Image 1 (tube, rainbow, N blue to C red):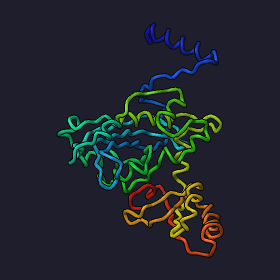
Image 2: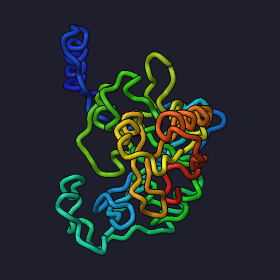
Image 3: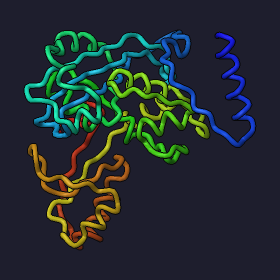
Image 4: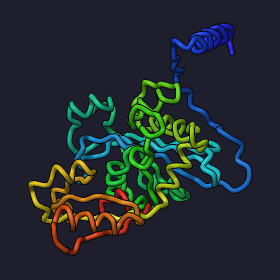
Length: 297
């Protein structure tokens, strides 16, 4: 550490100790988080940048992945490898998408993501994690079939960030919540940022964010479809957390909600008594990390 670095660190400490300031430090990508002793597993953080939000027709323009090892208790051990590749789409990248990720048509020109390299990189992963897996998994499965065979977890929806004192689930909010910031929005850099967040020990529960995420990912959930629910009760369903499916990709055109396996009977009883006002048969699916967030559901 240089003299200037030491001076800056001392200034930051003085500001924080005053109780009047909060200092954010620039994220520095780490290789080692803890000593990888004993049995460890391999995880992959994955992020795709695309031409748009339609998971069925838009195209991937960048794939970033960070492979890491972790202990059974959810403690991150070390970064093992990283993968980053651009991909030239068939159609031009819209301006709206360029404003989001900064990847221009000129940058992507001539690039192609090698499928064999992706498969080799992901082959030993015990879990794939994305910060919005409902988006990233659908694209990943379209392009690279290996991702349909892997368990997935979502670091946006499978950790109750606000309940743990964070302002929200966006990557920037989470970084700020642990005293960090970064200005890059390239896919692999966002994966490194997410790893730092997951390695963080959550106050109040004394567990890493990764530990909480893995616990929730392992649980089975039940997706219950409220088909042909009365239209005038749609606001009630929405208020309770139900989401609307427009009926694309073979799914029912209906409101649906995902609940823990133990809450299945209570949810069905609520729908029968308060929404349908009669005893109806409801379509329910059991989801696990192997198919949750997949286009196959």
